[in-house]
Length: 79
Image (cartoon, rainbow, N blue to C red; front, side, top):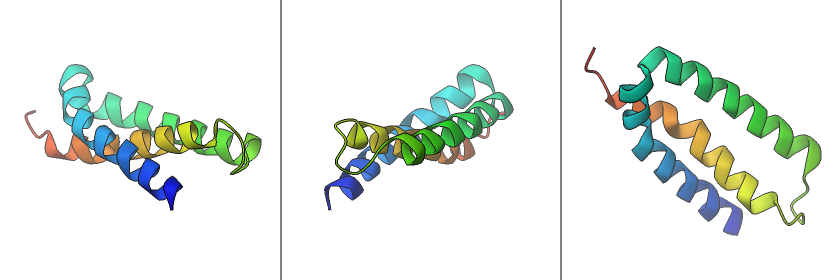
């Protein structure tokens, strides 16, 4: 329900800013840090939060955002 909407919202934002980040920092650098942030966000969410936690939905948004920045990087092909 709501968690899926929040994840999708984060995914839309992440995809939109992915190309900009890839342009600003380079595709490889962006992909590296996005991978680290995705790992950290998922690990933190699953280890420290429950679905009833106040920070659960913001964490779900962050996971959706950082895990899809990669797709925006794929759209940036100006090397």
